[in-house]
Image (tube, rainbow, N blue to C red; front, top):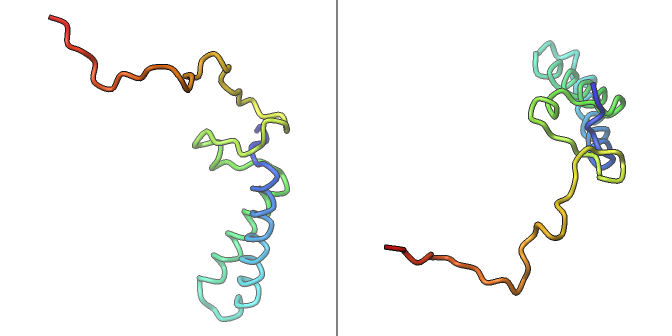
Length: 96
């Protein structure tokens, strides 16, 4: 799979994933299902941060990398954008 996790996204995944995994590990002995889910969610976030590949991002077509990091996203050419002084027609005249 192609990398689709950017730098900021990666840092957030590391922080949140480590926190969830720690909470899950500390409460795992309670015998409830909740801590195991925290541990699993944290592990998945850490895995996607380490590999820089997120299947959920791929499913939705998201790529959080910046343009400078090798993203395939392109910006629109400046001539395709409307000019600030161009007239805007909100209600076009009806032709009969």
